[in-house]
Length: 229
Image (cartoon, rainbow, N blue to C red):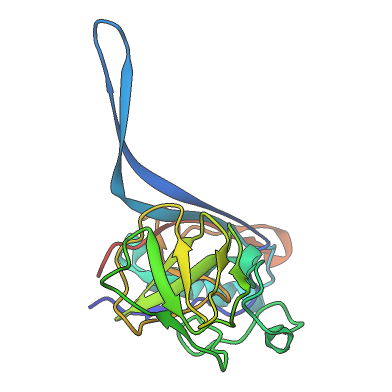
């Protein structure tokens, strides 16, 4: 089993791009050029992460981390920096911390004293998660919010298509924008805080670093969600 390595905690990316990489097939008629496009399961997250210019005390850690990945063979967890807290009302104010980084439970997640889980994996589908553990009768997440969950040593992430509102028992259905890699089992914990996904380098050339005057380095990498390990 591939070990999931932890990137250096700081500095974090100065800019980051995240997008879902769809799995489609387009067929074109040779006679009319009419096209038909079919969407298949297997949407993966992609990212471009650009680090700020770094002095030697910082870039040495990143250089060692990138080298240890062995190109695209390595795995690491990436947080979505623009979505550290959901836009909905899932999180009490005391969960918000002013350093902008949250806390790490050792595997890429802030671990709050509140549990949201999959309520029913039989009634759930790959585009609808039936969940429990929310506050009663409130909008818990907004469209565009993320949730993360784990399986063995892989973190997965989904984005919501619609607002999610809980019932009087704190249950809520989460409608996803595209099919998730799996249906998490009943009782599996979901994290709406600091959405995290396990990724790999997009190719073996992504571990390059650019060095300039005064030993200042710049690093930008492209990453893609790792398939099941």
